[in-house]
Picture 1 (cartoon, rainbow, N blue to C red):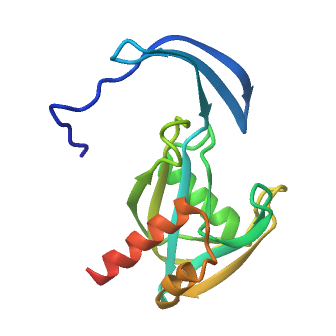
Picture 2: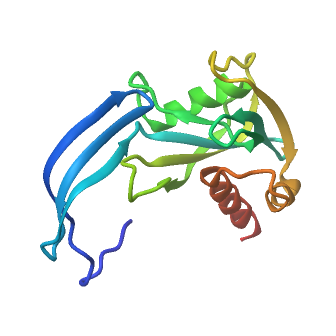
Length: 188
């Protein structure tokens, strides 16, 4: 539950909003805002995205499902956890997570619980990333990632995940943070 404090900063007042682009992966809004001090920022840019979902999926053998894929923004291949965006057809965030896990890995089932919620950049993005812990996942079908995804599944023993992160094999912060929380909870 979020805490509030008596001296928290006040929200900004939006004076106007204009969409410069409304595409699935590139929705950009330009706001004119007034700060509580009276300062006006005539152009404040916001990137809008649907909510994102991640899954820390662990098998009964204590392996963490990881994928390796090329990311064009960084021009490199690294380890990631199964993840994606929500679809309008998803009943809820967990349903989106279950769909993404099955599509990317062919695994499903298990015991699901929320692990953490993060923002990639709350200053410039409107969406949140919801990460679930899925324990005891099992193979259910052949993986069927989208046409724009070329990924490889790896079952990484949970005891090796910290070393993989420490070695710089993962750079996606929205994936590293939930994995570190998972490892901390196991030590708890």
